Every structure is written in structure tokens, then in C-alpha cells.
Length: 299
Image (cartoon, rainbow, N blue to C red; front, top):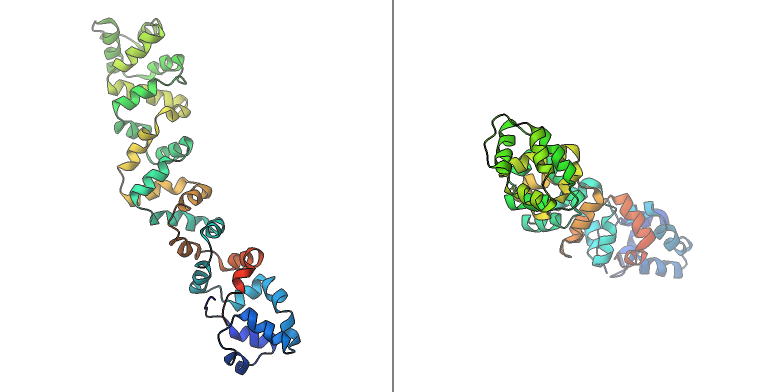
């Protein structure tokens, strides 16, 4: 039996039941009380179940679902699976704000499990590629260039946008000689002449600043190349944020992503979260999915 602050005046007004009868009812559910009234000849009470349980507006009024306390007490009786079902009906802003209930460590783990496309959207909505690369370890840049999805011709093309000092450093590495006036075309030709194995080794040998510049040029031409970074690399700038700033980066998530994450909350927290559901929506869902729970509510 669930004890709520129900609207007894609703029964008095709609079913001709006086206060004395209600006071004499003792410990019983509304459903049992109304059944008893029907047996005793109250013709209006005969239709109570069909009138109320099939009418969300009546459910909203009788059980006073505008009260967060009432919603919470009902929700506490539901199973975890039922609560997870109801979560999909929460407003988008509620889904997002609920993420703050997780610890930062848990948030980090949840975000790292997102598909890489979504993770990249979070990262590069908050950080420029340049700032991302500033905190990216050189070994992660080396792994980036090892991806078979990165075309050799695109790497060669990205050389065209490099600054003179980087071109000089690349040519010195390629030839062993200083080159004060070399241009990008010369570097491109030298690199293009290398077989695949030497080409890859030479890329690894460039200094981190040159690798970062090449990656920025590649990303300018094709942002999808950034997906070739590992999840650990993409997570690095996020893990350096304090929780409030970390949460701000997650505003780009779709509601379904937030929903999937908050479904990992402990079972005992779920009723409080779902209590934020719109009362009218909750009444509709009780009518269509949870009539049995209504029959457990006390008079």
C-alpha cells in the first residue's frame, strides 16, 4: 500500500461520497474503498475504475501528481527496468542536468565509451585542433600517422601549408644538409620518392611541432582524419578539466546519449531523477502502463 496526500475532495465531488464514510473506511486502498461503495449500492462508484484509470486528467487530479512528493512515492514502488523505461520521457534539460550526479571519474569512463564520432564532437566543439595537439603526446601523433586510412598523397599535400622553418627542418632530416631556401615542392618531391616503409619512418622522425602542423593541415582538408586519434588521445584534454567545465562540454550530446549514460545511475537514485517528469506525461504513462500501481494507493 502506498500512502499519498490524495485529493479526497475529488471522490466527494464526483462520486457522492461524504466525509463521514471516508473517515470510517479505515486502512484501505482507494480501489478497495470504491469497490465497497459500489457493492453498497453507489451506482456512480461502479464506473470508478474505467472513469479514473483510463483518464490521465482524473489520475492527475485524484493522486495530485503535480506534487513531486507524490510522484516520488509512486516511483519508489517501481522496478529499475520500469524507471529506466520512464527516463526516456524526461525533458532534454533534465537528462543533461542529471549527468552532474555522476562523479568525475564515472563521467570520464562513460564519455570514453561513446562512439568516437560523438567523442570527437565533444572535444572539438570545446578545443581547437591546435590546443588539442598541445596536450597530445608525441606517441599519440605517431600512432595517428600509422593509420592505414591516412592517404600518403594527403600527407604530401599538407606539406604545402607548412612554415619555412618547418620545411627547412624536414629537408635537413631528409638530406642531412642545411637548406635555407628550400620550398614545399622540394620537400614534397623528396618525401614522395621514399618507399612506404621509409616514408613512415621519416614521418616518425620529424619533431613534434612539425607533426602537429601536418596534422592541422590534414584536419583542415578533412576533419574526419581526427577520428584516427585513439580514444585515450581524444580524452586527454577533457580529463584536464574540472567537473563543471567537463559538464559544459557535454552540452553537445544528443538526449539519447545522455539517457544512455544516466541509466547507469544506482537504482536508489533513479526514483528521484524520474520524479522530474512532467506530471501530465506521468499521468498518461500510469494510465497506459501502470494501472496496477494506482490500485495500491491508500485512501
